[in-house]
Image (cartoon, rainbow, N blue to C red; front, side, top):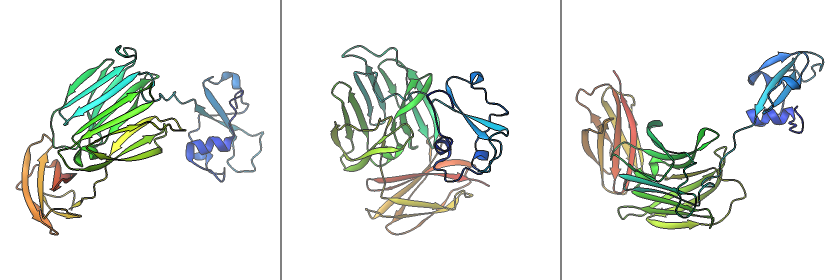
Length: 323
């Protein structure tokens, strides 16, 4: 092990593979960089921990046999959200316009901090925009579930610091305003709806994407969070649970499938299907506690979005037509 950055082999294995009770067999699962007869630390990178294990993976192997070298490089520094900013705000208005303001002081933009805004649909990035000053992005209205995110550039790598999950908007939230005051150590979340009460969650995550703390919020409202966390927060996640359940089966299908729901609040449920360009190809309704058999007329093979609405609740699911 190099210098004062000592790391026990068992601890090293725990870092990579979780808790390890027995060394035997675990070494084989880690990528081996090389096999050497005599470890020579002077030839190895200075920014990495070098870990050596005896050539045999049995617990009683001889130290004098060939050794296997593994490296654990120092992870890039994780930027605390909004640390470079005196003031930061992200404002999505009715999913049509998104304004992002980043100021290092009261009125000076952070020109030396690279920011990326991006949007995802069904896990695939559909667009991104990089900038280093206050900017406004016009959003195209779509019935396709969309997740919006913001990244900072850290060590030439963009790291996600804010995620507004598509479940937030499909649950009924229309606008989201996120504002931070680094000096005052506060986080403000303001949300809007069409009038109905919509519960949602703010989750604070660490650099390993593990939950530090979760807040239960309700839209429309304004919440100011000032409590400090013992663990460093690396990411903010806004999402919502949808109590309205929907199932479509079989999926994939050849254009005929069944839609069923539960936890309906209203007596009538609307069912629509749009293609990936946003064009509606089907519209129907189903009564309370009933199933609907959807029969599409000569649909083209591909992916479609199934949208099921019951009152203020809505569920969307990706369906596939395959012959």
